[in-house]
Image 1: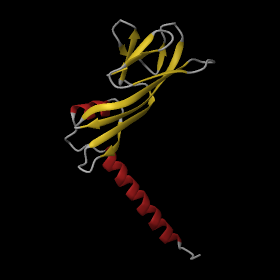
Image 2: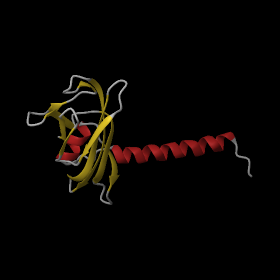
Image 3: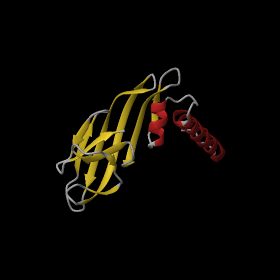
Length: 147
């Protein structure tokens, strides 16, 4: 096996890091012509994960504390944003997390999935998942949908 010098290894590592940075910048950076849907998703923490050959964003994801990407409320009542530390309809303090993946076509969300998990201290987590435009309810009756 050939012995590589420290400067050669450093140069190779720097090149790899620069290429990785370029790829991330190209994927995350806006083109200045983002659709309203893409701009709205970006404002809610979503990141582009795929682009088509023309450079248009075709997939975006989010994973972390719940954001304004979803709204919740009692069934049949107005819905509003929930916070990462929230109180469920049954009065239990819970931590809310969101994982979401959306597919876009011509700048519009055409499909995807939102997975919302509530965790109460000392209890099993409970979760719901729904497609864009749908709503689902937790056992407590808390009903959620995307915005």
